[in-house]
Amino acid sequence: MNEGEPTADGIYVEESILGVFGINERNEIVEKALFPRDAKRIAASLGRQQVGEVTREAEKTIEKLIQRGFKKFIFSNRALANAAKDKWRIEVEVQNATGAGAYLRENLEELAADSGLVKDVEQLYALTHEVASIMARKAVEKSLSNREATIDQTVQLLRDLDQTLNILSGRLRGWYGLHFPELSRLVADHRTYAEIVRTIGPRTRFEPEKLVNLGLSVSKVSGICGSTEDSMGAQLEPEDMARIRELANHLISLYGYRRVLEDHITVVTSEVAPNLSEVAGPVLTAKLIEKAGGLRKLSMMPSSTIQLLGAEKAMFRAMKSGSKPPKHGIIFQHPAVHSSPRRLRGKAARTLAAKLAIAARADSFSRNSLGSDLKDKLDAAMENILGKNNNK
Figure (cartoon, rainbow, N blue to C red):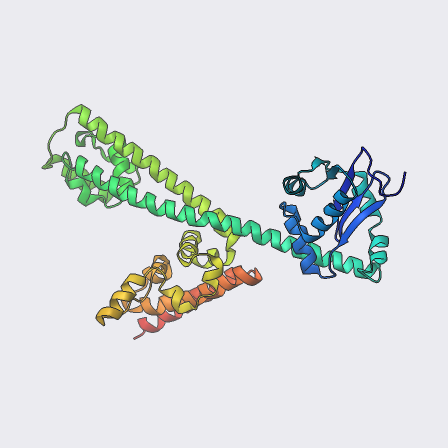
C-alpha cells in the first residue's frame, strides 16, 4: 500500500500549535497546513476551531484529503467535526483520544524543526507558552463577558421587581388602611408593614410582644398599640382580612426573592468587576455597568460622565431651561454621597466618580487589585471634605 493511500479505517484530522494535520493509521502525515509563525494568529485559529469554525488551515488540509479519496474523517475536536460534516457532507467520527494525536504530541519538537516554524526547542517552548497565555486570557475574557451579560438582565429584573413591590405595597397600605389607617403613618418601611399585616392581621390582635418580635423599637411599638385603641378604621369581614394577609404574604415572598437577586448580583459583580464592587458596592456596580452599556464602555468614560450616569434627563432639562445642572446620577445611592450634607454632595459625587473611573479601568484592562486601596482613599477624601466644612 502506498503512503497516503485511503483505507477503510479512514484518516485522522488533528490540530496542534503547528497547524492542522491529516495522519493515517500508520502515523504517517498525509497532508498538513501550517499556521503562520505568529502567536496571536495561532491562538486565534485554534480558538476558532474549538468553537467549530473551519479555518483556512483546516479547510486546506481537509480538501486535500478529500481530493486524495478519503471517505471517513476522524476528529478529536467535535465542533470542528460537525462543521466539516456540514460543509463537505463527509462521514465523520469523533474520538477523544487518538493514536495520531499522541504521535503528533510526542514528535512535536521534530515536526516543528522540520517545518521551519521554529529554529530550536527553546523557541518552540516560548511560542507554546505565548499561545497558551493568549488563549487562557481570551478564555477568561469570554467567561467574564458572558457573566457580564447576566448583569444587564438581573439589574433590569431588580428594577422591575422594585416597581412591582412599590405598586403592591401601595395597594396593601390602601386596602389594610380601610381597617387601620394610622399604621401607614407609623410604619414607613414597606417590608415591615407587610410583615406586621401578615403576622398579626386585625388591629385588635396587636400586642407589644408581637411587634417587638418583628424588630420594632419600644417607642414605635408604644405608638402603634396606642393608635389601635382610637383608630378611625372600619371592621372588615374575615374573608377580606384573609385576602389582605395573603397579599402581604406574597409581598414578603417577593422581598425574599429580591434578596436572592442581590446575592446573585454580589457574586457576579465580584467576578466581573472586583475593584468597582469594592468601591461602589455590588448592586450599584451592577447598575453602573448596565447603565453604561457594559464594563468596557464604563471604563472609557471620564469621571464627569460617570458622576452623571442616570441623570441624563435632568441634564437635558437643565440645558434647555438654563436651570442648575444635576450634581449626580445613580451614584447618589452610594453612602458617600447620600449621607453627605446637601451642600457637599457635589464634591462627594466628584470624589467618588474619580475613584470609580480608576476602578473601572483596572477591572477592564489590567485586572490589578486596587479596590481596597481606592476605598481607603475615598474614605480619607470624604473625611477631609466633611472635616473642612465642619470647621467653617
